[in-house]
Length: 220
Length: 176
Ligand code: SF4
Image 1 (cartoon, helix red, strand yellow):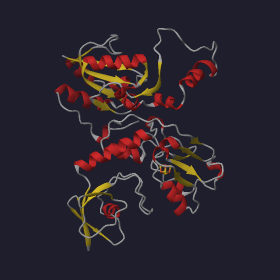
Image 2: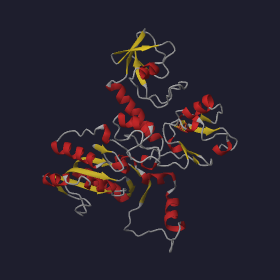
Image 3: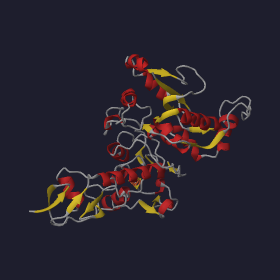
Image 4: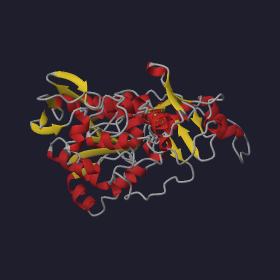
């Protein structure tokens, strides 16, 4: 049996598995946002950054190799993850009290686990447009963290390619594959996987807001 | 006696209500604490204090003045609640020009009788954007939540009164 060492634990892996895959399988989860088991690794959020044999690497993209020494829950890495989360918060507009994903949001949950009490940086308050054109589905771009899970789900699972990420740096944005750029002019439907993979409240099914009472939400 | 000051800037007083939700714990607290400027005392200006709790973000010039006075007078300053920490719900106006916000509220909104933008010199001028309090002064501790639960206030004050670093348990950290 081949193994890697993760924070002193010996963890088995099979060829083809990433560090993230085998850590999750061994119930030693590494914090992550843009990763979802079964999806092609994307490595954009960097939250799963670990130290492998002394070098930084994202656990979700790094194939496991025999004898790898992986550090994850060290003070250094925890501090870096907190920094990444703070940047994710200030780069978008995350008004948790008004977001219907609040309580079931993976960004929020990761920040709670990281002990984030404040954003530290000056918020950008970027101006981003909302797309409410579709009768059943809402895109609130304020909350998008560009994890590309919807991109991958639409392309690889739904076979539609409704979404993509466009631009670079601060100009990065989620784009919709239709002539008008509006969701209503795509063939997306509410059953599509792409509508349900968003880790934050950027893609929502309309008419279901605040369905689950506070106290009973996913991470309450 | 530890002197404690509190204020609500661009907030909704929800954090103060949550503070009061400490209920019977308040009896223990007032044994150890004397309130200075606070909506609880109605004292209007802040004196020398050990601890200052700031609710709400910065939306006008007076807010900036108050938070600076708190910083000057309080040994420990705590940003309390979502609005103080990241601007919160009021900062949703940051997406619109200030003129558009004023026009919507005082000129074009539904049911407005004598449309006019208030210009009394006594009214503090609005800031262009709503900002968290840490943009104006150094903040020592943060108590997140909208509002932070009463137990979070307890944990915070218990530690500060003992002269210890507050450690908020994960289950008391929330942003809504
Ligand atoms: S909309 Fe959601 S799933 Fe799509 S990229 Fe943005 S955060 Fe990720």
